[in-house]
Amino acid sequence: MTQPPEVAGPFNGAPGRRSPDSTGQEAPPRPGGDGGRPPGRWYGRRPFVVGAVVVAVLTVTVVTDLPQHASRGVQISDETAVMKQVNQYLTPCAYAVNETFTIFRQHTQHQLTASDEATAPTLLRDDQAACSLTDQSMFDLGNVEVPGSVAGKQLQQLVGTVTLWATSDALSAIEAIQVLWTDPSSASAGQQLSKAERMLGADRASALANLAKADNVLSTHLPTLQIPQLPSLS
Image (cartoon, rainbow, N blue to C red):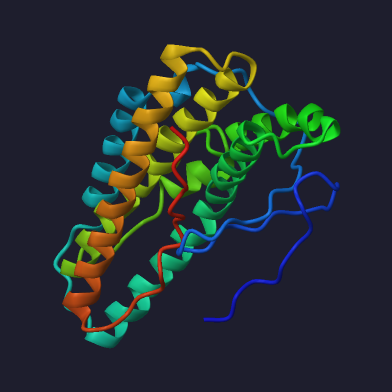
């Protein structure tokens, strides 16, 4: 697979973003926009997100869960299109959480300059916004339509799980890191980060398992899910 071009480092003002690859290789972080929201809002709470995702997946299932008699070639084409959409919509949050983890690890290892330390909170706010359900890409991710074929049912589950990975697990981790940035001794934030890290790993594994099952049904290799394996922080 051709790797994406390398880009500039975290705090040099280079425009644009690049997502981490599926192997977990760190993507060099760069500043994003000037948006962001304070931590702890309703859109980051897993119970709410779980409910929203369940409703979205059930809606998709009702619309698309019809008998499928398409040829294997057509099904492969359809499921390939689904995976391309998922990767497209997941990219901003995948990059954002990888950026936050990279910056926080550099912060705890005292590898940032004073200028970097001053800039980092803005980057963390941008990363938080990128994984929020209020972000257009996250909204689109939760509304990807998947065919009701046998392989499609696996991808329906994948879409729901990946949406949770981004809008619940990743967002919770970023919010915890924002608190720890200013209050390193916060026990509650440390516990929140540990839980978020566990859920990030578990949901990533679940989504990859769904993709593997879809591959097996179709006897093919659909596009790789671009979901990073993040380094341990807690």
